[in-house]
Length: 202
Image 1: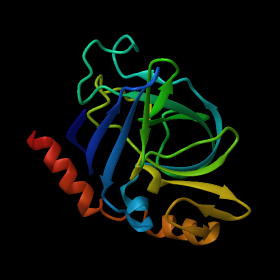
Image 2 (image 1 turned 90 degrees about the vertical axis):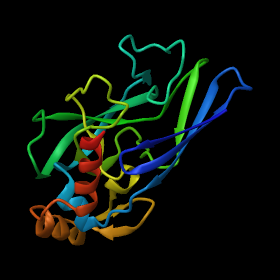
Image 3 (image 1 turned 180 degrees about the horizontal axis):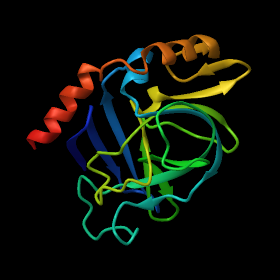
Image 4 (image 1 turned 90 degrees about the horizontal axis):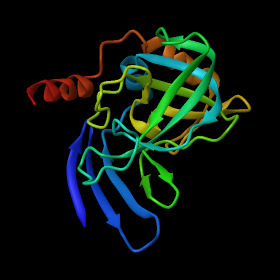
């Protein structure tokens, strides 16, 4: 079964594979592309930090359990605790640790959601993150206790040996920090303005 729908900034197709003990759904998204300048101006919080803990995946339902009938806005998510090392833009919800949510994950023996575009994390990883409030259809209770990554994998860099890298590029830390400092106060990127307008029209 394939379900199709629209999320902020991406077209999304869900492919359900139901021939294994753990049901598997793969989310294939078509993302808007952001430059580092747009990431710097569009993110509400930019920080360098260290992955403290990757929490067990859970459903985005009030009970945290699998719904009887899975709808388009039902999904498994994984929260990641990030220790803040350096704040480059914005004011975090906590001075020490922030929660970053990725909409994928596996509940063994039940369901697994994989994604082409959500970022991956590993314990003790040093990261540079471009974060924003979660206004997605998956944040059903409009919780404000976590962030999501702007542009999904585009807004997450691994920091190592004075370099930052992700699927798109590898840069030296000095150059990307210069971009952040230069563009963090620029106007909101036009692509985000259009997305916000589309949400208001719904």
